[in-house]
View 1 (cartoon, one colour):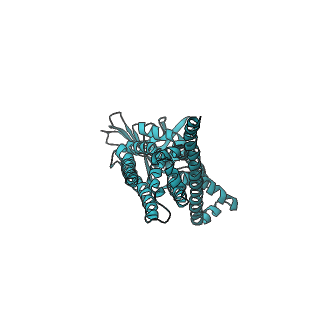
View 2: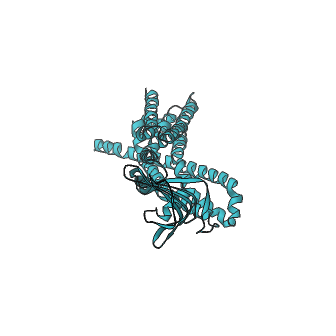
View 3: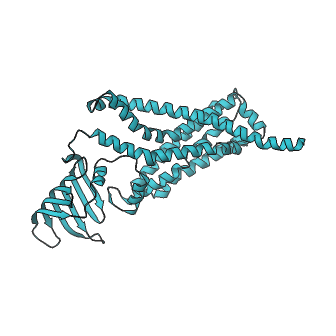
Length: 366
């Protein structure tokens, strides 16, 4: 009977410890996340308050902050996991609870395993925010920001908008807020092999019930010496007005469907396939970020409160985590520009820092 009780205790005790570690970790990670988000929101509002008030009243400051919040929180989750884990491990080490846990036979890998569900929760929250909520919130913010402009009047762009719509190349100098009117249109019609079929220059393009129509058109075909002039020209293959609106006023966050369509070259796009392929790989790599942050923070749990090196372990973990975020962001930027393949651009940093984290943990265990 005593053996059965001991066996039951050996099963229940790690579960209780795992729940306790999860609660301590989640509490500190959530506090860090909310604190950092509040700080960044405050700094952003201090910079944008005058512009927000010019577009509305005091209540619009709250609207602006609310629409910015999903993107801010989504991008801060990996950092909150890192700092929250370091704070949790330092607290457990300072109260000698970590010493008692390790003395009970619960090693580093079981500690990591106990916190895996919490990291999976962080991954799910980050993906939902950045792929689902943030694109809609950023689009609503962009539409509200420009709401004073006339809907059907072309708005001059800072620079000419170039995009690919199927095999055609399109450029516009101005786009209305709803994307239904274009100004200064240049359209290059191409065949499937990329050979130019026609060069169309139009003063204006408008979308109506029957589709797009080009106005005041000059058309040049290869081999013809003179341009043909027309008052109007139907353009049934034109992009949807909503797509033109989104491209003229782009948002940083992109929904998963838009990334997949851009990777396949479907619909109007302003970026090359490398951009969308790298974004998709970076989204997949996002799923391992909290786990890498937890691995980099775990060495800070070693040592006694008054032992030399306790603060150094925490500082090293913090610097490694920040280095991972910086280097990973730089690699993704290079990949999006086509300077590196999508897979290396997205996965070199996670792989390298995971190896560094494992080496640091092995060194502490040795």
